[in-house]
Amino acid sequence: MDPALVLPPERDERWELARQIGVECAVVNTMNIGDGHRYEEYDELLRLANRFENAGLRLSVIEESFPQTNTTVLGKEGRDDEISRFCEFLRNAGRVGVDTVCYDWMVTRWARTDTAVPTRGGSLTTAYDHEEMQQGPDHPAAPVTAERLWSTLEYFLERVVPVAEDAGVDLALHPNDPPISPVRGIDRIITSVEAYDRVLNIVDSPRNGIAFCQGNFSAMDVDVPATIRRFGEDINYVHFRDVVGTAADFEETWHDQGPTDMGATIDAYEDIGFEAAARPDHVPTMAGEANDTPGYETKGRLFAIGYIRGLTDS
Image 1 (tube, rainbow, N blue to C red):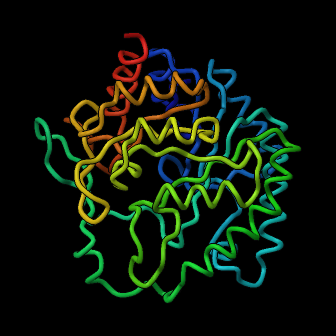
Image 2 (spheres, rainbow, N blue to C red; image 1 turned 90 degrees about the horizontal axis):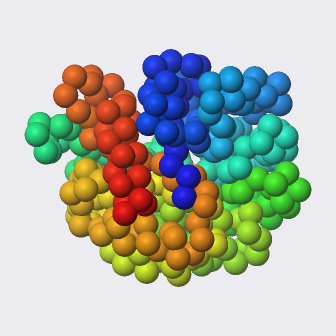
């Protein structure tokens, strides 16, 4: 695997820290780290890729930085135009050397009910409590059924996977986070191993693959290393994280403190020949950090890269 970090689109200290710890693979997710601008045009993607290259980094993965919104997910009027833009984004990403585009099929983004849970040494982590979440009002788009979401996902994949094949870009579908349904009147469909079987069968292509977010699979109550081996070459991208609890009630953990045997997951990736990007995700906030971006502060991600390297080198 190729250890990676989410980095801002403009150079700052985090770029230097990445290089100093030996990371060469950059992930752009401006919704979590950055100004929220969605990079899709060729010229801006080229400039972004060149900025990273000039700093000794390579733009490998783009997450949540493309023109796909609930218009497409819900199958509303205008989705064909949005899908056309997404396809052009894929072509542009391929032209500048991006390996992978990670996307999700959620009407709402990842959900947490607490973003400041004390954990080891006073560090802070995030948590989800489904009972607390469900006490809130329904989402404005509710109700949304699973049947509707499967229909729109099939429509999307049938149109974009051939373009990804031509562009030489892997698609990696992220699980619903948390992997539980419904959430405030919105069904969620990417919540199980069986759901991924269905996704992979919609369009049979190596470009139609999985973003294997370990924490979500742990919350699905599956054997994570065995599931890595089960999906094998269908895994196009990895989020390296762990949680304690269930899909209905969990906390993020330090990478060396959760219930999953992380060394066994590394062995599983080696067994399937996984060589693509893998990044730490949802890390604790450490001393001296403001917790302005829960799960995405810097020190915990640097710790996680060291932990990954220790496991891969052992």
